[in-house]
Image (tube, rainbow, N blue to C red):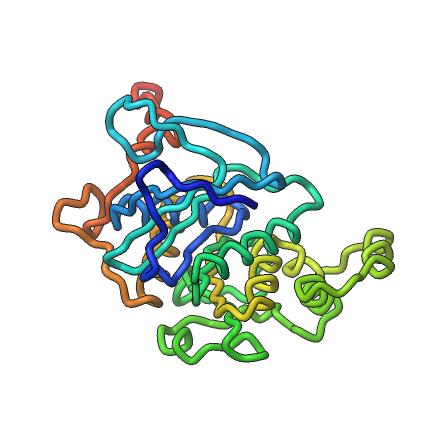
Length: 282
């Protein structure tokens, strides 16, 4: 992975916290990063050239005018006033390359002086074991602070640790060994031949590789989750973005925001789900 600075831009030493998405159902993590970048008025400082990410290109997601600014698969933004770096991922990982990608991203985080990595990810509501009837928008978390994944700061916010995390479970342990650089070729081939069990599902998701690889580099890692289904996941993106700000003690709200509670809605969201339905049909 190579980090390419924009012309005239530089890395900011005070930006020691990195926020990034883990691709999952509904693309909620990516939507949350869009919301944070626009609301914090973060500036694009460069992009990451990573061979394990599928290529893509598009129009600027945040600008209002046709200035010819292109959006690339993996871009970095800094919010100096908030001491944050945000990485936006716009295309999926090549199949079988997730662990390699996570290792490269962890190396980038260390090389750029990051101390804390926050991963935003959605989870499939169909896999949810227990539904909280009092609050269907519950936030879950996973932290590297303690061996069992707990974190007192997250608990104070009323969040619940991801119950499916078990560092002693075979897939989680296998992932941890891979992140530490232990060769696991024989065990890898045996996993491919076996049927995937329910307990193997969560460690197979992108957030798990990012968590394990960043943790192996000695970084503090906090994963923030919300359960959702496919569809209009904008409300879920607000939930995750707000949760990340609460964790870090940031205030993204502005007096001139164009969304709820002062959030600045990215310009590209205007066409995210197409035009509204023709009400004359009803």
